[in-house]
Length: 231
Image: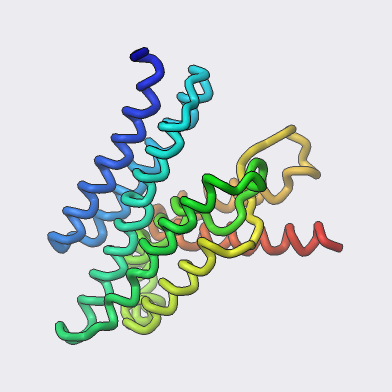
């Protein structure tokens, strides 16, 4: 067993580790900290693929392991965040929080579909699970910074509706921007550059509270780009 070949797998397992730790924290009642664990897991999710390509040690087991880790970090963890947010504002005997668990179910489906879908080499088809997890996990920060929005976000039916909308986006056929630059040409990458500018601006202004707005901008810009491209 070559040690070099296992480096990306170790990074993937760290993604999984922080996803599990995040679940523990959320189940212990610290829902807001879930966002930090999603961010850390996303960092390792980026690094494992980057390092695998850099070292030229991509493997089938690495691909499968990555999907398994992502189900936990970007499926189960955000699903439990929504579950706990909903559970905190309804009657303890209510079944409503369980409706938010569509998120881990369709996250798993999306990840299995992604592994078999050859169309996603330069664009994503459907919302990537890390983007979905970042949106959900940072909603409590958006609610804290904008009390008017917070009133809506604390409504259990709004949380359930958000869960189902974003779960459907995960498995949708909607083409979405991927940060895979074939060149630095402005005209060919204008929407990528716009998204980078919006992301930096929102994060500088609102920190974690800006992330849900960046994800919405990501979806919106992708739809506009698709509409322009189809004309």
